[in-house]
Length: 84
View 1 (tube, rainbow, N blue to C red):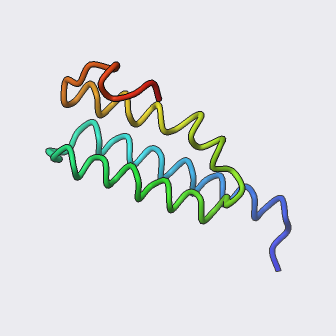
View 2 (cartoon, rainbow, N blue to C red):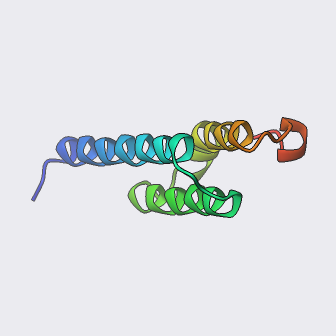
């Protein structure tokens, strides 16, 4: 059995990897808008499997970051894409 602190560190490392990978794909890949939004949702589901009780934190930190990248890639005015 893994030490709780070790387990938490492992989950945080996985979180950083998922977020960094998602950001890189959103910024550099030739995705359609639908694919980008699907990637954003898939990442959220994966992160919430690691931290099921932290959806509000995810929505506060990562959702706006991903939406900003998507808005810039597809030249969407922020007002049309929502505040987050």
